Image (cartoon, rainbow, N blue to C red):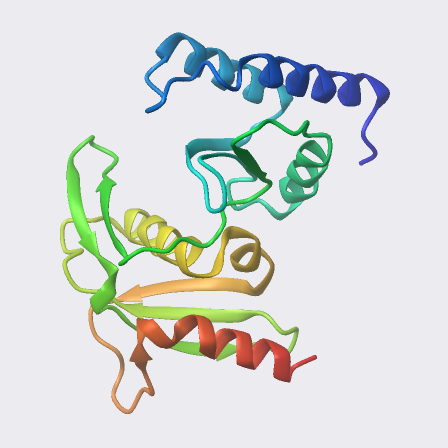
Length: 204
């Protein structure tokens, strides 16, 4: 759907506001009032997920994410295309890959927090005729998570390794199991990015 002139105006107004306040969030983003206003202004643009934190190349970054929705990916790309340069900041239309050890705190639906260490996971891949992939993880330490929570944790792992855009466009299905079926070819998760990129390039 084509973006209307009114929507473009709202996007431009958002970036003008952000430019005026981008240095006021605090060194550790402790300005709660401004964070809440940022949340309201982003949600006024659409049903997006967002985050701010340390940047990849600069001190800070703002991610306006489609939340895994391929249709919203088009919208977040457009929003970021109107961004105004702000010293010390970088902007992303989807969650970028992370330099991390796959160790993170996961919040369950009931509010309980558990530590997940994806560094010990294994995976197997299936490639479909349309070029999409199914990733099946063998993951330990998830016995207290529901099926949906396991899939959410797997998406966090994939976004961190591959970046959200690659996951949206190339990963059609995700599975999480306690054990692989017999004679299933599997690899350590450290090989996942290289494996997927090679298979993707081979199919071009």
